[in-house]
Length: 226
Image (cartoon, rainbow, N blue to C red):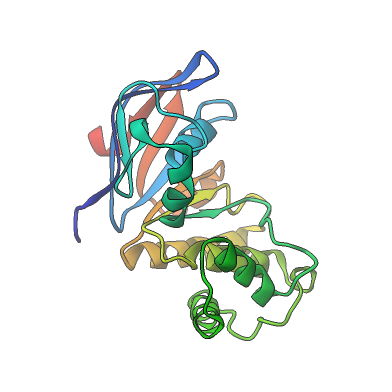
């Protein structure tokens, strides 16, 4: 596996307002790596994710994500950073008044796709990757929770990102469906994408062991360093 770092933090402290929520973070995540992010609510998980996608500014230490220097990130650079990232949310965040195709097309046009033929081909491709190639004309409410999350993953794959941030992606799903989503994300990581998977689901975590970042007491403990 290519051990190329796609997320790197050195001596980083992450703040919420003036309050440090994560201190002295040294971290390197590589291409094709699947990594858990664990910790109680309020432990700093969300703050780390927000720093990675440019929602929180990096003011102490150095960090790079998908080739972007976070300490020097300008507001105008953030959309370009986010094209290198796919984000999967707990509550799917699909547009309920549009078909699956229109949901994916909406993201594509918002990130600069113009050629309708290429848009159609790319939608077909990502839906095939998540096993829902026949659902283009379906409305989100006609899909099960697991299918909606697969569409959400397809949306995250649209711009062929280097990194996928999965924020409690199985939080609203039953155990069996959670395992299906987990296997899908593990497969996607094997294709060379780095996946950072924030979860509370310890059952899932015990069933599919992987490198773990544990947020606790303003620190992140990395199982790769233990």
